[in-house]
Length: 213
Ligand SMILES: C[S@@+](CC[C@H](N)C(=O)[O-])C[C@H]1O[C@@H](n2cnc3c(N)ncnc32)[C@H](O)[C@@H]1O
Image (tube, rainbow, N blue to C red; front, side):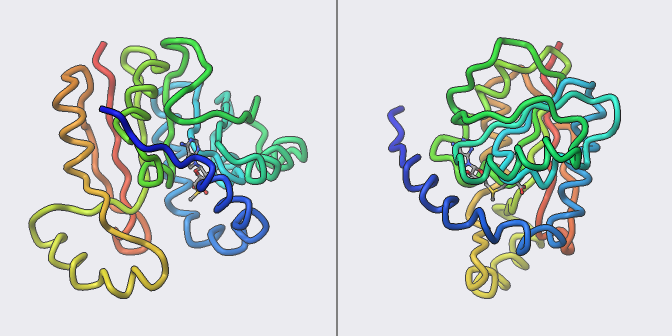
């Protein structure tokens, strides 16, 4: 299926965001960032982070891991590079400009692919997840954290109720967990092993998917 790609729009948006991003999101996303890094490291030492942004997750990766971060935006990446060079992110080996759907990285080269707060922004999320699967070793894990909504059930009702408020602060719950489940089921070689609530009160969620060996 052809997908309309507005990567230039994303780059422009994050050029504007880059100077303020850490001040706005550092504390709010700390729980999600810490848990994402920990969940990725459980799969093994070689970790790719897609949409690394200013590198807020990078300091959370535990000792013994080797992390590569990629992002579309040079302006965000400059800040991630500063964290790496200042020693604030000692496990980081490299940050580089790449599109989530076209990773210039070898097949089966990572134990984990972390995808924090980016999957909802990619025009072709299934294409990005297919790329994550390509670079993942068998038995490796994809760890997604984001604002992810449900289609049905009590949580869906609550999300519907608070949606107007959340829209005001720029968080849509339009991206559905069921979309990622459908992608996994259609592929058949990846298993959804966890959906965990994150701060605040489960509004953000973490999904862990494991590539079958
Ligand atoms: C909301 S920020 C999240 C940054 C970081 N992961 C965090 O949690 O703080 C989204 C990041 O995804 C990047 N991004 C958006 N679309 C992308 C794509 N197609 N490929 C790679 N990075 C992308 C943006 O440039 C931005 O830095």
